[in-house]
Image (cartoon, rainbow, N blue to C red; front, side, top):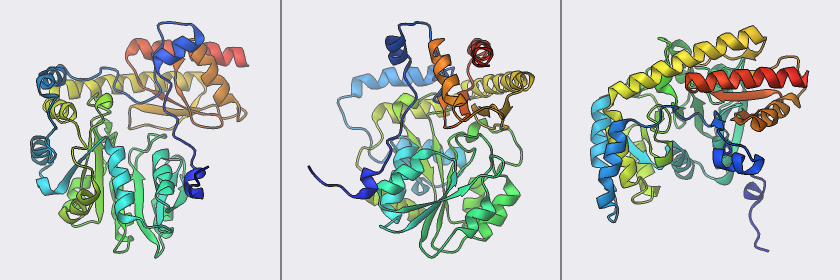
Length: 364
């Protein structure tokens, strides 16, 4: 048997949401809906689909390893230099590049708990030490995270909006937080769901970058742009940070369809606004229904809602998820009595609520 380090051996692999086809095959059902992976229920824009079809004739060629056209569009969109941008195979790849570039064995990485589970997995795989600071009422405890920084700290992950709770940290608290971070520590603002945010106090990370703040901003085309299957994301930081990341980045890490689809999606403002509107309407509907049903939830600025039955036993979350699966409704169980549902189209949200009422009534 080939031996591996304990860091690797003890990793619990990330479990993605169950695909519809797999669920239907297992349970012998049809017409299922998936509200588990925070995908855009409208899918990609027609502009993006046309761009993808046009790339097929070039699919035998390698993509532009420098991603010139997409970086140019992003630089114009955010008013930054192309040298400040790195493309990734989803923003997940950039998280991995950050660990490989800046974290040596024994170095520390500060993060919230709960937050995006991939941070912990990649830090452990990179032989670093993750330092978790509990959320307060579902929100990052930035003061506690600043206090958790030591001489061994290299990175701090702030998922904003936070996955799985959907909550955000606001401008004033971020300003105070950044003023407390010592030199040599890089703050990672993971803003995968930023385009859904409606709170006017959401921090402008790109403005903070221009002040020289030690941070990198991660964004993705997987969520509001509906291109999850293409795996295309990006990071924006100071040129020096991006230069270091590019030294460990694999050549041609972002595909030709990914670059071209993202380029088209970025230009489709109509689809962007329609996606925001569908999400806001669905969020309002679900929150009202949760309130009427006596279900607790965190106020979300993302395209999902984190909810729980306050007085239910810890086993109730898994019971609800499994019972919903049998009704062809896929949501995400996140431990104990906590669950997360992606905001879908109106008919999907209505079907989820109807099924949830039936399940809760049966379990009682």
